[in-house]
Image (cartoon, rainbow, N blue to C red; front, side, top):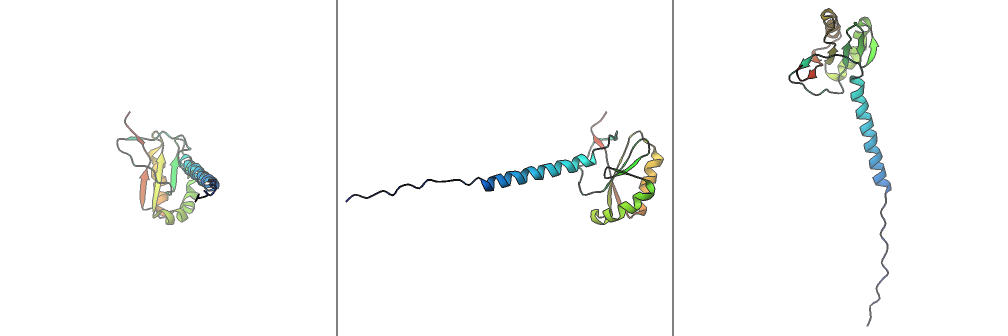
Length: 134
């Protein structure tokens, strides 16, 4: 008796799920790269520190240029508007605010910004620095 071999069925591989995963990964990397670029968009000459900690993307970041211009998350604002704009962001961040100020900027301007942050409900500051020494 001879056995008849069944014809082998051809195997197929469905590429659609793999393409979906690759596209989702691309979207994820595009979004996360834009978040970091948003915080470092201002050309500030930050002071150097020997030890630094990575930036947390969900913190509101207040930046102060050497000329005295104030920015909240990369968008220009004024000291009078800053407090009102910070209040809803502080609820999300738990009272922590990032402060980036130019190294050669006015110390009085930094103190004014810190005062506005405190009045808006900011409890802690994360100061922006560059790593390394001169």
